[in-house]
Length: 293
Image 1 (tube, rainbow, N blue to C red):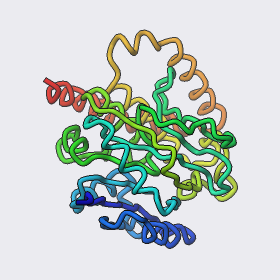
Image 2: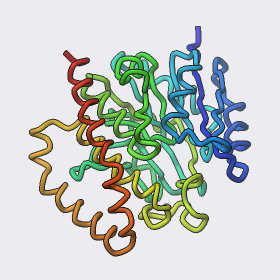
Image 3: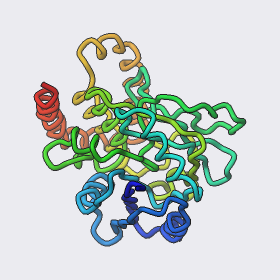
Image 4: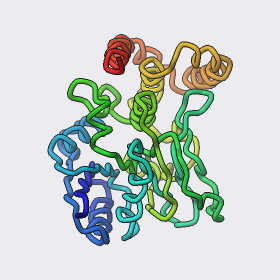
């Protein structure tokens, strides 16, 4: 009996992204699925809270979270589902995610960098068949994030699957890190293919698909990039891991805050005004530790 897959799409109604996304969902060869669309165009719940709302409404054994600027190959769900059956502890599956040109890689799995940032393997390089092997990975890209419901239920914080303090950015690394700390695994299935207009729903038009995302984001989104990385480290990193990677973290901090001082000094005040989120992350860290015990 095929397992039910809940496909949750968050949209802001930009361009015709949603139409294309839904058309690709409709064409899936896996027949047992439900589709839930969360519309953020009138009242913006932000990505994380919108996904939480969709997951709570869903009934599936597996949850596929999509940005509306994603389209799926017709066999994406069918192929990706097989990854979950490799190992009962696999809670996250990534396919091969390409840009809309269908040549450039967007992600072949999410990894934790020495700088404690989210590293998308293959990001921005030409696909020449270098990532054709199924293998374990750290996590999955948030634009095309396939999860086992059992995993999401086991790592949620109170009623949040995705931390709603994040709004957007780093939510995929936070979920992956939480899951890894709880004993879950990620897996990469290259035959499951999706296409992503990188930054299509959050960047200015001339920044879609470009590198160095900060340049093309508004101040609020830049603040989320800075804030959410700190929240993710506070909640999930071990004391030893933090110490070992301190030189890398320090170098990254210098670059980030140099950019802020030169180009967006107003973010300093905004960051201070949002300092309460750091305390919230400490509280959540204690909750995570308690749940593990």
